[in-house]
Image 1 (tube, rainbow over the protein chains, first blue to last red):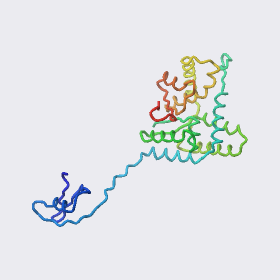
Image 2 (image 1 turned 60 degrees about the horizontal axis):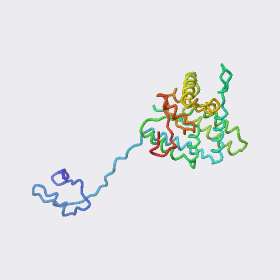
Image 3 (image 1 turned 90 degrees about the horizontal axis):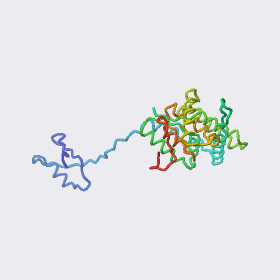
Image 4 (image 1 turned 90 degrees about the vertical axis):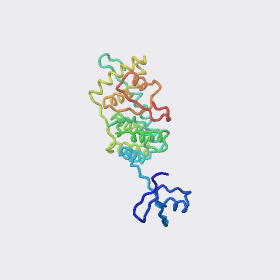
Length: 103
Length: 163
């Protein structure tokens, strides 16, 4: 792996991209720069993936859905309203004001 | 700004978690919101329909729950309620005639679609995408084929079948 050794100071060398299968011996070998011998201390830090922010639009819509869901209507109410919609549409007849015909 | 005009039934389905199309409509709404900045709207006619549904029953529980939906829609700042307008009336006249000619439908059958056509005209005028299931007379599919300014989507279809 390239560019994994960074000389931070005379005494501190930082190894990045340490693989799980690498032994302490492997790390010592990798820190042997220009013939210098190092003692190795290992500090393990978890790399936090940058949390992706949801677009504002998604946050707004999720909140709206939650508010509508909170109405929590029963099956009977949903059926009654759907029936109302159906009847309203079927019965919404118009009359042509010029000819008097239903349309 | 991308307006989506929800049909009355879509609002009813969103208001009941166990409703047949609840999850599909919800998923589609969030998917759209991920792509673009969306705004949700309904037609004033939807409120007329819901009020008719309430007035049509004597069941106290149904009345109470229905009123809850109506009030939550009216007070929610995230929902724009489009009124009927003079420009919308003109579009309604045009699309009703276009649909009649294209479908070759009789006057009696055409009567049933007045509300669908009013809502479609409202969507066209507002530049909104209508979100609704089509009916057996394929009114929205036909309108979409003859009007470049009419946008319609059915969010109850399975993934891969979205028009």
